[in-house]
Each structure stands twice: as structure tokens, then as C-alpha cells.
Length: 218
Image (cartoon, rainbow, N blue to C red; front, side, top):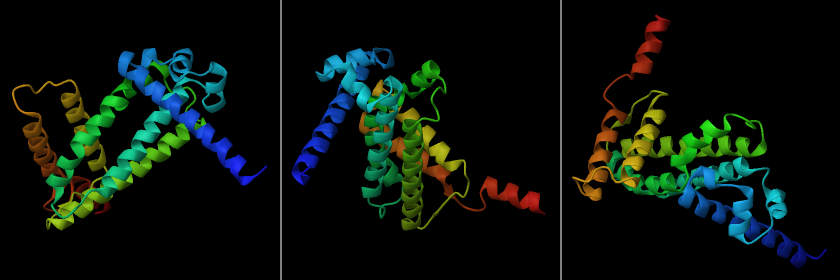
């Protein structure tokens, strides 16, 4: 087989996979996780169910692929952000993009877990998802640490911090997506929220985790 033929085949395969994922996103936007069926995805993508099964085991596989893609895209985005303006500015730059990803697939994660449970958690798509989450979390912690250093402060040294920041971003994103904070402008809400989220992330001394560890060692 020639190199050109090989590239054509793999290129077409990637295009078909991309078309499948785009169709899935469209269905999720319209009807949530319950609207995501292999038959519906095939119809929206203009292909056959048999072709879908060449790339994905089931709809859980498709959703896991979308989540993985979202995590890696966010990691790239965070890596591209400037650090020199400090922690609040970094978080403010992140919130709108995080909200966009949250609106697309993130907000459906709880529904997906409730419906599917942990079935198939050992499958390849789930391993890829866990790996992509680790990539994003690492990028986020690095960006937070460097931004804090740029403003002359330190990031709190506590393993709970990443979960605090992510929980904050998810809550803020949900508020933005469903437009709860109607009494303030979106720009003000993002700016205020970034400053509020940055405050507990800074350290003026040993973190609670570090104090506990020292006390246990004494």
C-alpha cells in the first residue's frame, strides 16, 4: 500500500470519527444525555450504526471521548494563558472558556454517572479519560502556581486545592450557563468570582494539610 493511500484511509477514518463526535455534541445540546443513542448519532452524522461501532463500543464510549477531548482542549488553553498578571487574572481568563466546555459536555457528567454507574470503568476510553483529567489537573496546578509566584505570593500547599478550584469553576460555569446571576452583568460576575476564588488559593503560611502533617509527625 502506498504512503498516499495509507494517509487517505487514516484521514478518512479521522474525519468519520470527528463527524461522529460532532453529531453527538449536537444531540447532547438538544436533548441531554438521554438523546445520545447510537442510532441517533448515526442518523445525525449521516452514516450507519455499523460504522459508529467501528470507533466506539457504545454511547458511553462516545461521551467519554467527548469528555477526554474537552479536558485536553482545556489543558492546552490553560497552558497558553499568560501568568504575569497574577492569580485573579488567570482565573478570570479561564472562567468563560471553562463555562463553554461545561455547557457542551461537563454539566452532563453527573447525569451520565447516575445512568451508567461505573460499568465499563476498565475499558480503554475510561483509561484515556482518566489520563486526560490528569493532564488538565497538572496544567491547572502549574498555571496557578506560576501565576501566584508572578504576583509575589504562594499557592496554598494542600491536595484539596485542585478540588476547591475545580468545584468553584464548575459552580461558576453552571451559574453562567443557566444565567442565574441576572442582577449583575456577566463581565462583573466573572471578574468578582475570579477574585473570590483566588483568595483562598493563596497561602500566608503553612497550609492546613501541612499543619496536620507536622502535628502527626511530632
